[in-house]
Length: 214
Image 1 (cartoon, rainbow, N blue to C red):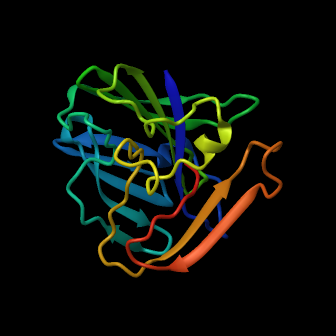
Image 2 (cartoon, rainbow, N blue to C red):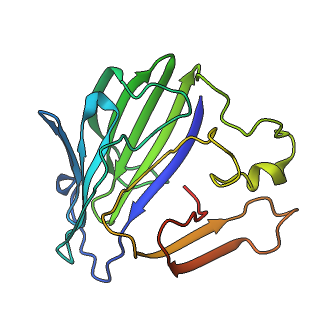
């Protein structure tokens, strides 16, 4: 099973200790809300194949409404119709490594591909982290034809602009408008091939592909 982590975050300069009760994950009718005292993300449930409706910075009272109507996740040649969807949430107890947090689990299937999304929400942090798990069969190979999977340079440089139509979209926020200021931060973990371990790109351009980490 493949595992990918994605994190959405805001940063606040004033953090006051809060309890786990400030975290909430609730599915009501066809709307899923995941929030704490700092950040809130609202989804259209779409039978588990979530579509982000809005993202909110509560401290700044700033709400971003999304303009898209397609699922946040999409895979080459894979159906968008989700089946066997389930949702539940639980509190994960504090350990010596991690503090107490809320976990919201969504599972569903697209054809023969099983998908699990686990959102993690902490009471003192303006972050919604998400772990992705995949199992089963996809309808196509998720690499450019001819790519040597043993060549780590090829894998590091495989971007949507050069991978053709065989690149899955793991996360998506479709903001209205075009001229947004973007900070794309890319981390390089193959230290025997890269000396500069962080690449930070800041710009304001519409319809441009940026590479960063999830």
